[in-house]
Image (cartoon, rainbow, N blue to C red):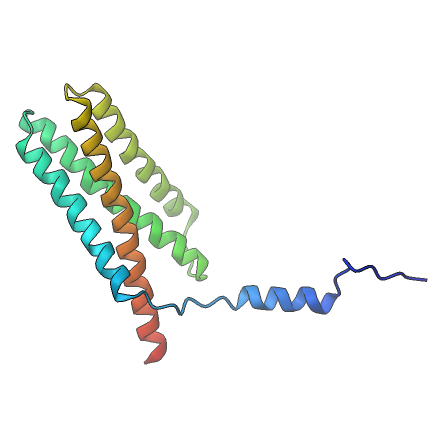
Length: 158
């Protein structure tokens, strides 16, 4: 004799849950407010960081180092967002590209931290560069996500 307990799950319930999980659709169009906020944050973060570099009392090669880290970080963060999203949508992404995307993002952050740690700057300046960099990376990910979501919705409607 087989007893059914209240926490037993039938195969039908398990299959229904699996089907629901597999049918995940990204059909939530980002709101204009979120799109505007994302682009504004990206613009404010990048411009603030660059104005800070422009006005800093550093050698030109040091300014170039920090500017290159910003560009490297932005590209890497967008690459991570794209590869994560591709995998969620079932688009093939090689493990090597996925790994390199994460590695370069972490590396850009570490290079900024190491550069600022060793820089001859006031703590407030170091904090400013760290926060402007962080804002820029986060905003780049949000802008990429919004762009991807909008394109997906447009393609599925048309």
